[in-house]
Image 1 (tube, rainbow, N blue to C red):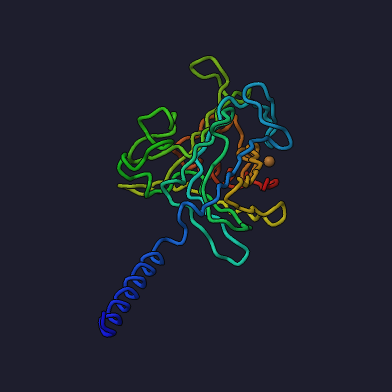
Image 2 (spheres, helix red, strand yellow):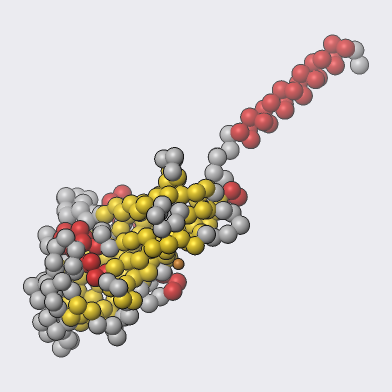
Length: 272
Ligand SMILES: [Cu+2]
């Protein structure tokens, strides 16, 4: 081998090495292997009391006693932020959750985030307008309107998903067709597809610094434990009277209830 040939082959080898280096650097910064599990637990309470479906008795700000027979809501578009302001948005396809009181399998939102110390959590209560109007093939799992998962949480193409559903009994409610004093709050409204409608999409941001930041690490699951005071649904910025509004669905009054429930989330502690 003469020296000129040697130099050329060395140069070719170096070029090849450079090319393979470059290829590696083009890989996404957050590849799956480097992500850490993070759960957000939604612990439903009423004021200072635990929420017990059917058996618990509670009183709202209007002085009406009530019990809750059904409570479910959508949580979506989860985002976490570090103290330096950098944030990680969970890929949207993996960011839709249905929370159902009384069902352990639907009590938390489990996502994957890069390792890091997170001081802020942001999520949407409900389903964003873009996803609400996507082809059904893009609305799988808990969003599947035809599957059992969405469980009566879908109105239809133009009205979208029911973001928040709470039903129960109260003597303040009139007797319905089934002979019960039932109240029903089915709240949704994504802003409209063909025509603008009520927009009840709510974004909630919680500061985690006071009650414990989330330390996401690959080898364990951090859990952000939230207390969700559903008493606030009736007793928030608007005092909702069950007698005056025993049934609220797709109407202007639903805005008051959505404003109330946007304030029902409180960070209690974090298990790291
Ligand atoms: Cu906990």
